[in-house]
Amino acid sequence: MSFHSMWTELLPVGRSSVSGGYRRFAWTAADAECRAWFEEQARARGLTHEVDRNGNQWAWLGDPAAGDAVVTGSHLDSVPDGGAFDGPLGVVSAFAALDELRGRGVRFTRPVGIVNFGDEEGARFGLACVGSRLTAGQLTAEQAHRLTDGDGISLPRAMEAAGHDPEAIGPDPERLARIGAFVELHVEQGRALDELGHAVGVASAVWPHGRWRFDFRGEANHAGTTRLTDRHDPMLPYAETVLAARREAERAGAVATFGKVAVEPNGVNAIPSLVRGWLDARATDQDVLDTVVGGIEQAARKGADGHGVALDVVRESCTPVAEFDHALRDDLVRILARGDGPDVPVLGTGAGHDAGILSARIPTAMLFVRNPTGVSHSPAESADEDDCLAGVRALADVLEGLACR
Ligand code: GLV
Ligand code: MN
Ligand code: MN
Ligand code: MN
Image 1 (cartoon, rainbow, N blue to C red):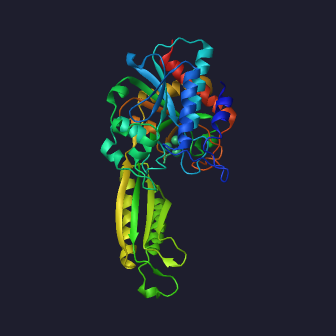
Image 2: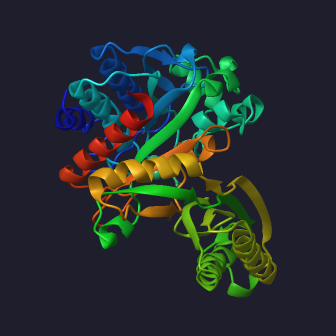
């Protein structure tokens, strides 16, 4: 099956007819459809399909028990109203690259795996890269069991409803020990490749990043009859905090975003009792990130005090910088340079990836495919088909360099 026909088949799954964006959240019906598609691709190619204890899907050519396997792949879930490329491009390209290698008639000297990591975006349960974090031992089963979605459904309940045993989840060091290299192909989530005039590049590192929940608790009251001086309105310090996030990020050369907010009781004519905002902050360096978040928290406390509002700040996750394996990265650059010329772009990124999580355990690298607008986590995310095919060829070259004779 060609790249184009795989892509077209996957395209309608979980797409909103209103926004045109994707809602492929972990352990939902749309996720199940994506997973069925993955299994079908594996079976159609005679690959061995398995679901691991954490719900990640694997398709194997050769026996992974032989060890030193080369694995590629990405994720199929999405953010709310996400684009078509973030995740799926890496999975579809993995199958297409394998087809290309078989077409080239190469002989595989190492087992080759294709993976679909579960719940990369964390759109439903609030924590990104759940599948890879569990496998790498960066998230314990106990912590995962405590995750809940916006409707109060726990992760174990959602897993169970989707037919996966939540009691099985946990670290999987034996599985990781069999993998000699993991290479994730991903759409670029910025404009660097476009500016440099390259279809494909190599990743250097994932910036440190994290999520913090800010709970501002005030007092619900009537919007028409409560004097301004009598109010404890949590929306005011929240608004000040959003502005502080922008200011602190600008000052430090970092990024900080409040992209999700919940308001109670959420009535037009009521002063809120609670404003809960989630901060996503990222920087090239951990010290800079700590300074930015510290500055935002300080501004939030000052605002809360000034308006007679209580504040709790909870760090929901913080992922340290992930440097990709230097030797593997150099291999990728060398392999790409053969087809694409000597100046292969090597880029850092502010986006989180399963490859970043795994880089703490196994040699890991990433390929980026040009995104002409740089837009991502939006229905407007795009990549030209020619560039996608260049990505497939690059991935095939990399797999050939690593796993074939
Ligand atoms: C996931 O894509 C993230 O970087 O938030
Ligand atoms: Mn993403
Ligand atoms: Mn992604
Ligand atoms: Mn991501």
